[in-house]
Length: 118
Image 1 (cartoon, rainbow, N blue to C red):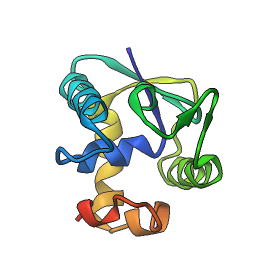
Image 2: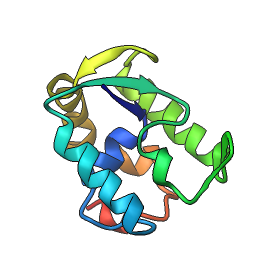
Image 3: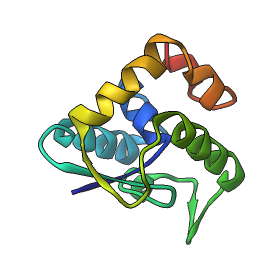
Image 4: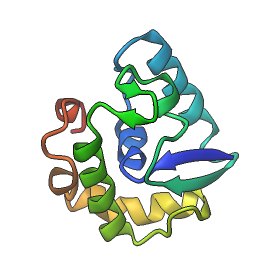
C-alpha cells in the first residue's frame, strides 16, 4: 500500500523528473510506477513521498502550514476520506476535472514547483 498526502496526488500527477535531490526523485519515480498496482491510503500527514524530502524535520514539515493548506484545499475538492484506501484509477477519475478546469492554481498556487505543473 502507498500512503499519500492529499496534495501529493497533484504532485504525482504532474511529476516530470524534477525534485529536491536524487533520492527524492528516485522515490517519486518508484511510487509513481506503482500507483496502478497498489492501493492508495490518503492522509494529511507524512506519507511515502515525505520519507525522502529534505524539508522533513523530525515529525514536522518545514513548510507545515503551507502543505496543510494544500491538503485542505484538495481534500475539499476531491472529497476523499482521510485514512481510507482507494484505487488510483478512481482517484485519477476525480483528479481529471481538477486538472482540466485548472483548479490546481487554487490548490497550491504558491508552490515552488508550480512552473513544472503545466
